[in-house]
Length: 224
Image (spheres, one colour):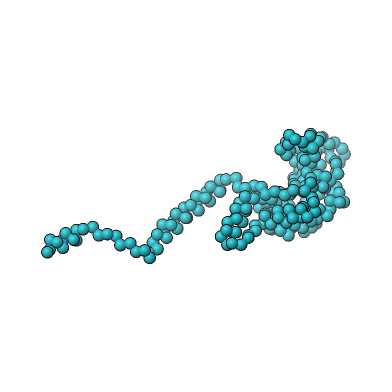
């Protein structure tokens, strides 16, 4: 009898699994923390496309909450897209989300006459509306950089010795207008690029059409 009890005692005990135990959550939470740290590290060394990030955030929020969510840059783009569509301004104004945030591009003909940095009278309502949307929809932590671009035809007169001065003056005038509409000057920046940053060449366009496309003013709304 004693020998039988000893033999039973020597038998390996089977582990007692309790289905109600939550100890597995510790391992699970550790794994999630490691994954989060990994993705933070990846993002810290990546060239982040802010537009895509916000689109992903919006999509995830919609799926998880079953409710449409919006984010700052997508708010700006939607408001401007609606205005463009309602007023048939597709040939004067375009809006895209890119790696910096949201980019608003004015065709030069929409704002200025050739060789001039003075806003056209009929451009004021357009710029006023765009300024109001940016002012009311963007966040105070967003930087607004205005870029002036020209074509590759040299200019040389008393007012503008080169395209650098012309492009800088055009950007500066838009910045001043944004300030007059209530955008804080600390959030604004003007840059002139002359013809140093041409758009990608469309082989289907003529040289003059390509030059016209390069004559533009770009407003970048992005985080500091």
